[in-house]
Amino acid sequence: MEFTAKAIAEFLKGEIVGDPEIKVHNVAKIEEAKPGTLAFLANPKYNKYLYTTEASIVLINKDQEIEKNVKATLIKVDNTYESFAKLLELAEQAKPVKEGVSSLAFVEKSAKIGNHVYIAPFVYIGENVVIDDNVQLYSHVFVGDNVIIKNNTVLNSGVKVYHECVIGKNCIIHAGAVIGSDGFGFAPDENNVYRKILQLGNVIIEDNVEVGPNTTIDRSTMGSTFIRKGVKLDSLNQIAHNVDVGENTVIAAQSGIAGSSKIGKNCQLGGQSGVAPHIEIADGVRVVPQSGIPNTIKEPGSIVMGTPAFNIREFQKSFIVYKQLPDLFKRVKQLENELSKLKGSE
Image 1 (cartoon, rainbow, N blue to C red):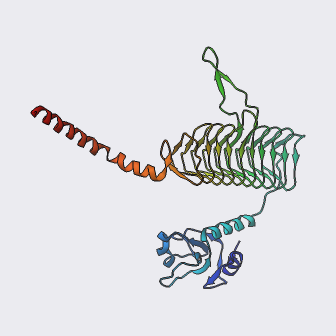
Image 2 (image 1 turned 45 degrees about the vertical axis):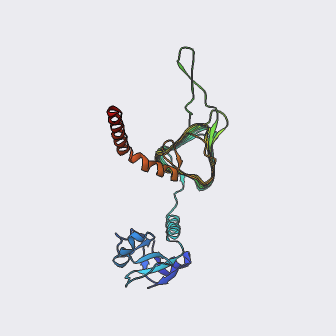
Image 3 (image 1 turned 90 degrees about the horizontal axis):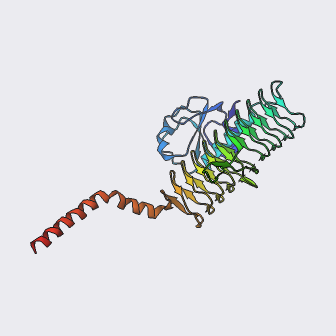
């Protein structure tokens, strides 16, 4: 679909500088854009491309300084990142929506299927499943018995949802994710043979959650593993049994949250973060990538770094000393040698 600069500016409540009738049909990076595309500028590192870009329309912040002539039509907005995200949502909504149940899918007779649902070939829907309106299930999705999937949620190819789990409204589960597999529960007997502890709970994913590809979320031993409203999980994350991830928390790729830990609201965990079992992290905590969290963090809004992780300022001071250890060691050895010589001369 094509959009004019005027239509885009009205949608974003922005200010046009240039031709209001110019049209775009696609989006592109500002440094790679071609005529007919829309780009955006938010990072000052890319300012130079504003004057060379071939994009027909560029979104810029209202406080962006213009140093020379710009070929493209500009739309000034309060926040380019947010505005660009809104445009992408608009473009997605303009795409035709698939509906219907493929003859190559298998849906158990006891399942309840809502209106305007899409079920692709090779999907399996188990006993007593409830699929609400506007849900989309793509090829090779498995939905176990007694699962509930609420309105407007999308499960991409190869997602597996085990029995009894609940997925809320407006969620996106990406390819290969596994929801509700058994938690890692084993107990050694007198012969040190590990016996499986049955995992009798489920996973509850609340509304507006996005789960990245190949992420796994374990069912609880008892009760539920919770992924609260607005949580965003990146690729290849492992969320263990009985974990509770608070509202609007973001966890980047390859991170692991061990069993029964509780993550607060509005937290940010960088890639390859690790959280030990049975601890709590306060609201608003930020964890630097590759950090390990062995103990509870009680201070809301704190920033931690390292393994074991502690306050980022203290870590940075410590690291300065750590880098100097080889020189400090040499100086200590020299002082020891000089002290030995002094003692010998006495």
